[in-house]
Amino acid sequence: QVQVVESGGGSVQSGGSLRLSCAASGYIYRNYCMGWFRQAPGKEREWVAAFNSLGSTSYADFVKGRFTISRDNAKNTLYLQMNSLEPEDTATYYCATTGSYCARLFTRVYEYNYWGQGTQVTVSS
Image 1 (cartoon, rainbow, N blue to C red):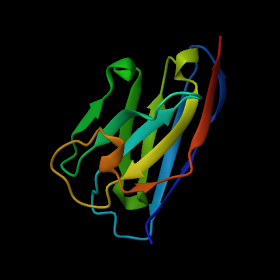
Image 2 (cartoon, rainbow, N blue to C red; image 1 turned 30 degrees about the horizontal axis):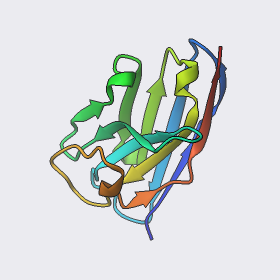
Image 3 (cartoon, rainbow, N blue to C red; image 1 turned 90 degrees about the vertical axis):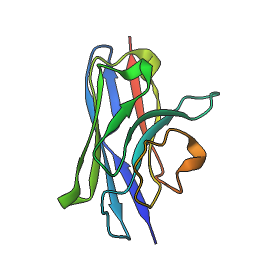
Image 4 (tube, helix red, strand yellow; image 1 turned 90 degrees about the horizontal axis):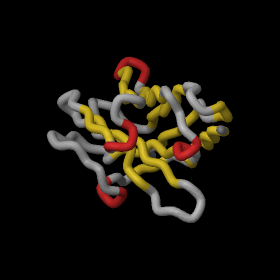
């Protein structure tokens, strides 16, 4: 059974940094498509960043230049380095995988089949 588990959330002040991790297990990682999403209270889940099987990445406009997605295939782990955090970044952050190889970048919730439980990020002003 595929499992993804996020960690690394916490509380920081505006301008601070956090690094989220996502550990994948239950299948051979093989550069499967993976992504980060977030959901703030009362809002829909929104896409943040994605990694395809070819090593390409993409970011939502609101995090470009501040967040960096990376992966360590040897450790089956996906990361999200978040810098220059703003109060508007406060949300529960989710890691997800399609569980398959993909050549394009997926940005929609329904395109991902396996989700973690989320990790809370709180940014205070």
